[in-house]
Amino acid sequence: MDIYQVAIQMERDSEALYRELAERAADAGIKRICTLLAADEAKHLAVIKQMKEAAPPQMTETAILSDAAALFAQIEPEAFDLEGMQVEVYQQAQEIERKSQEYYVELAQQVKAPAQKELVLKIADEERRHYWLLDHIIEFISRPQTWLEDAEFTHLEDY
Image 1 (tube, rainbow, N blue to C red):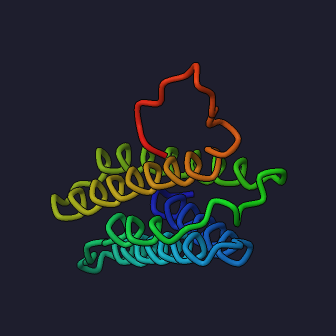
Image 2 (tube, one colour):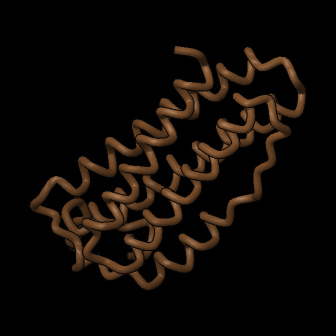
């Protein structure tokens, strides 16, 4: 399998995972964030396909972090099924993003055209942002289980 085909499959799998997470999400904010992540993966897929076909690839900037920040303000932590495997699914998605970022960094070393190398590194950076966003989702939905309310403990940040 060539390097582009591996990337194409990774992006298809990631997009499918985020679409599934969006369908299963109980909270409208998380549903929207997962939909945005799926759209970013579809955008990456299109860029990789263009590169494989030797067409001049183009990629638009993502606004996922600013969009997600606004959505986090509307999310109700009570909407999450903390007894289920929801946290584990987001952790699996996070691991996929980590592996994708590493793959694109390696791919950038193999790509010869400077414009393509720049785009591959840009995709790697977006995958890093996706990892960071998933980290915040995991923290947000895990907090009710991990946050200890006790007079003996000092909390450094507001909850």
